[in-house]
Amino acid sequence: MNVVIEEKSKIYVAGGDTLVGASLLAELERRGYRRIVNRSVPEPDLADPAETDEFFRTTLPELVFVAAGKSGGIEANRKYPASLMADNLLVATNVIRAAHRHGVRKLLYLASSCVYPRLCPQPMEVGSLMTGPLEPTNEAYAAAKLAGLILCRAYRVEHGVNFVTLIPANPFGPGDDFSLEGSHVIAALMRRMHAAKIRGESTVRVWGSGRPRREFIFARDLADACIFVMQRYEDDEPINVGVGSDLSIAELAELVRETVGYRGRLEFDPGQPDGMPAKLLDSSRLRAMGWRPQTPLKTALAETYEWFCKAAEKEHGDRAFL
Ligand code: GFB
Image 1 (cartoon, helix red, strand yellow):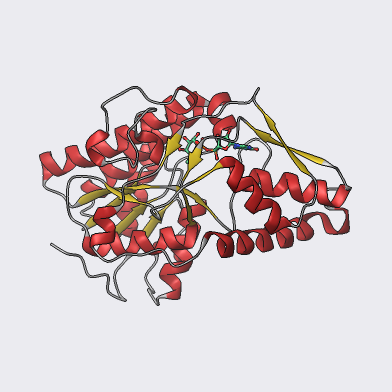
Image 2 (cartoon, protein in one colour):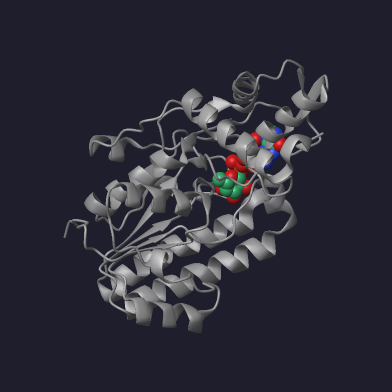
């Protein structure tokens, strides 16, 4: 049942305004796919079942990438667990149901690496899913993502549809959320160090102990992997998508400092939560299928920072962060 995405395939990226969704749209367009639903029809409110159903009924996409649903870093997860969980449950349910009802040929659901247990053996294998308690700081969001993953599997069992799940490492890149409350670590540190550089401040705070380890994937590489998986992966078991290596938050902070050109000191704040101690995915299955990430971390950080500087300047002009 391998799916060949043809130039004329009708494709819908649910959540075209999210980091991963926007990267997917850019990548699909770069490859010459012409019939992208997002380009001609505005996306509905995917938390609304009737609107979502009507959108699928009228647009009839053949292939659907599900990159929709609210998300955020550790702080947003601590403050807004109910909003994040409810939105992601609604979006997953509405999109998956409508996709089945309106005959979508294949659907790719994007989960998140926080679906693994807090103390999962590293690297995290799909077999470890649901073998232990979730990380408390993102339990609600993770439970919703797990529900989406299981819902895809349930639709396969009950209706024989071709719905698959991809579990990505932590994505980042141009277009990321750089807001104080919503950002993940890379965007947050870039923003803070950029501001400190401009204001001439001597220290920048880094949350937590600096010891947690994370695996990061550049959004463009993740988009490439999503298209690869859409074309070649058919199993009911989710597939991990990572780059195969991780680093500590302290190491990451140093890399961001180099990228930004900030010369001050980094100060760790143990009063802030660490979240999961480690989150490295076992991506051997995808590797064995021949997929490789294209962008080294340093290059990806530089590209992200360049985008951020331009966006900040556009919004605030010379007064950015002064
Ligand atoms: O990126 P982040 O919020 O995502 O945090 P998670 C990663 C690590 O960076 C944590 C540390 O150990 C944070 O304590 N960190 C240091 C910071 N400074 C900062 C900062 O200024 N901002 C932020 N945000 N972190 C999220 C989950 O977990 O990742 C979601 O909450 C989702 O559910 C997403 O899975 C991919 O990897 O900890």
